[in-house]
Image (cartoon, rainbow, N blue to C red; front, top):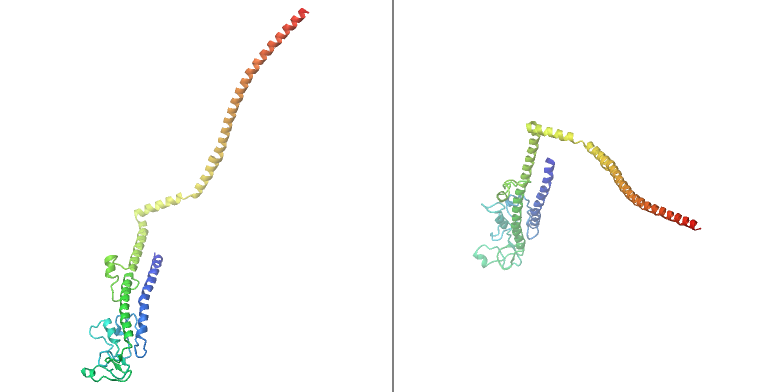
Length: 306
């Protein structure tokens, strides 16, 4: 029973591996953006499945971002979580990098109304205000935030499917999920297999223990009777005897019987023909005698006349 149960669990484990690859592929794509670390987008973060839902727990070398944040008065931002900030808002905040100046004029960090009259900086300086302030990391930041949202959705589905499957149970979820419990079963798929295994094992033990009861004694007697009746050589001998007597002996007797019947019929035919011939031959002999008598009479008359 354990071996068969293991054969059932192996495909479930393979399904679990396939589920893990869904978010794993999406995570690797996200890390290509968050760990690009190329000027001017100096992002150098590599996430794992353990930190993807709590990105503030990622082990980083600095407490603040190494780059200034847009609309943050030219300051970096903390990698710590702010209040009850969601993971989605956190990712939007730490990757919202400020722009760089493409020209020295009309480009600066906005520090208040005074910046509207005097806004100039050096080329490639950080900026978030002015017509010559470009945001080359904006597309990367947009790809990170949108990719992170999609990853969270995939990861949530993976976790709930994992909880329903039951090969492993996610730490933050109940196994199975509430939807699975209400629609299908209160046990995971693996749990159902294990329950079935336990029931089969209990049934086997009950059948084994049945031998110690009166019903078990009856079963043993029936088994002995069936064992004693299982004498296959008698069946083979019976088949041989049946063939010899019914097929060969009775077949020969039947042939002799039919031969005697044919002989009897033939004798009847011979008797009838013989009777007919005897009658006809008797009539011919009487006519012959009469002819000889007439011939003698004529001869006698001839002699008299002579």
